[in-house]
Image (tube, rainbow, N blue to C red; front, side):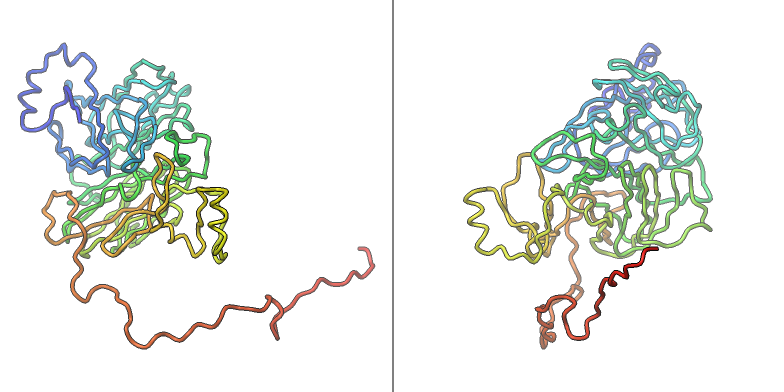
Length: 460
């Protein structure tokens, strides 16, 4: 990442003292990001202290302090996002990436955000969920004029309440959000809060989706619900980073949904509580244990749990199609159809023809076949016991007893204790299932039947 004139690390105080008034009167240089890896947490070099978040496959924007105001610079621009290794998508985003950088501030901070438009059309930014002056709300035509290409606008307000928020355009929203323009905003509490616990791991990510035809690079912006690339922070499994934790740590996940449908987010091996929404912290008396919470369109959910069970635990959307990779929605279901003897004949006419789903879609997990350029498989990923048959909105929570505090590196596959893995039964086989039905439904002796009543000839 190129931070340019932004400051970080131990040299911050010295560097900040040397910045002239002329420099502070100029636009702050935007920090740019080209990597799709998960960046380490950005511990605040200036301003009020806070416990930083980790954005899955994302990063936090640095800032400069100018007369007590935190100044950020966002650049709206076309980007190329690595959605998975070898799979690149043309998107629109901020500061080199989609989603844009996470903005982290503290309750009570005065924030000034410079927004430069390098898109081919006008834009704005709406600060989703924030309490702020009406003229800073970012709705083009209603609360402000649109930001024309090449222009820079300034938003300034006080972060009035702690919570998990988002930012996204409110100008040609269908196109710009469908192209990936969005980002996270985290406001940390300025002091101890009765409904906000201290956590050792604080993760954040957005749910987003795109319709990218196999072999292409640009999303189809007119698609409403028929998406085929289901992402967390514009990444798909197995390219989504795992969440890691030391056993016994309290973990927070902040999840925002900017897709066109809801997502029931489910975690294995643990229970959690919803501790906050984009409306603010949830009082303890209003919480209950869950393993799945539905995140509807335009909502934020903040969940917390104790990572007390060792292992590699699945974490995913529970809509089964959302844990699949690129797929064609017009492919017929052929389960149970015998293709023997047909495939070779068809391939003489259509060389690329393949059988899909004769026994079920799991065949796709191990099938080797040529794919169009810039496309990733429908099912992919390999674990210690074989193919995972997953894609899209799926990753893992990796809990280890020896994971150092503050270490976010992937610890690798979990080594199962001896005798603690499901195993194949070696005793007498199960009873043979009954043979497949051979008669026509409704003709077996004693089968229920129905018939249409004969016409009575009377009119009513």
